[in-house]
Amino acid sequence: MLRRLTLLLLAAAVLIGCWITPFDRPARAQIEAGLQRALTAFAAARALGAVISVAQGTQLDVTPGGFGVSLAPGQALQPLNELVDRFGAIMLVASVAFGIQLLLLNIGAHAFVSWLVSAAMLLWLLLRWRSGNARAGRWLQPLLVALLLVRFAVPLSALANEAIYRTFMADEYNAALTTIEKSPASVSGRGLESNVGGEGLVERIRNWWKSLPDMKAGYDAILNAASDWTAKMVRLMALFILQTIVLPIAFLGAAWWTIRAAMSGLAPGR
Image (tube, rainbow, N blue to C red; front, top):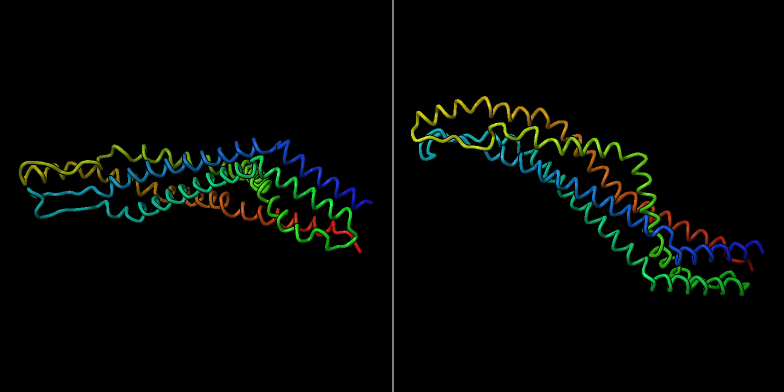
């Protein structure tokens, strides 16, 4: 009798979850918030990459026509530029992952999926209720598990994911993003954007000599901040990989195990 009551409560919870859907709207809002965070970080990476690319591409031609001595001191920034590119790529992938979650959420929240889950749940309940055989309804169980995952895994995972983010990751994200967003302004406008010009050799050498202090200050600003940027970018990459790959897979596995265990535990004895 207790097992049958548990079956009824489980079926009622599934049906209420399918049609009342108290968590679909907040789950969509949480996924959209995560998508916005990833896009903001991607935009910050592109802005920082643009500044570093300008500095990296600066050349100093000190002879007329560009023949003779040509210096490219910005090539020392190549490793940092590559890191920024990889950071931007991971932020783009994270944005795509949040977009996929939105798509899956819309699929799971569709009325057709709710009808399928309800029908499968009621049929499974009927088979378990009427039969004294422990194998009754076992052929339906894989389909029901899959439908329950489609309907509930994404919204519940999104809510749990966002709760973990707000509890443990929000401060880290805000601090790291603030540093990345302020970085382009802190190093731009320091004499890194223009080449040395002039009509003659003497004038070119004079202009090159005058530009050295500003260029040195610009490169020093980038190199001094590079270690902080690297740490912040690595932390942001770890944060988004955790949010878009590790935690969703963990939540999906936990949901699958929970559903299978619940159904196996409710099998009636012979």
